[in-house]
Length: 230
Image 1: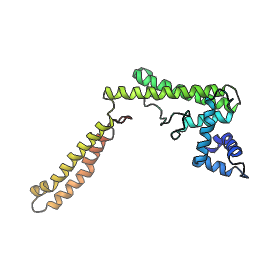
Image 2: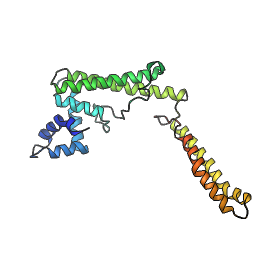
Image 3: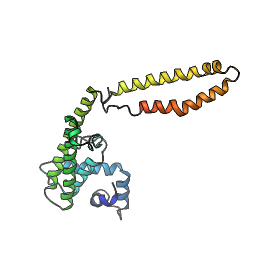
């Protein structure tokens, strides 16, 4: 997140956490490098959103939505749920092509983004509705995580994804077959050209680099892996 997007937060952080600093340079550096003090302050501000007895400031709402958007480290109790926030794989699919689970995941993601962005806009306009949008964004984020889990489970059950353990076992089998093939090459070279097996070895090595390795990579790399551990 660029500093110009953080200017309100950096100013508030500077005044509250670093009052001894003559300039904002240290505060800007903390924000850029995600200094522990900066992260802790964001978390403290963000938790104010959940406290019905506290009227959140615009800075608190911006801090909260920043943590929602920027994939924070595991939070303290009562703060934003941890975990990556990737856009759903089916987000660019036509609605008619999505599975029900994909559609639920995409809908939750879009609602999260819309409410998070609305919270930021309202916070910058000093609107009292900012905190409401921020709370809704948090609820949408929880719905997104739940929908994503259900989509992944459905993909595993329908063999669109492989459990991690199954994918690892597949890769291990491919490696064993590859090692077996490589071990046969010297013997084949000696039988094909007993007088000059090194020449055949070189031909085999070239074939392995040009044909076998790319074939193995194309077989393994596109294989879907699940986001859930077995």
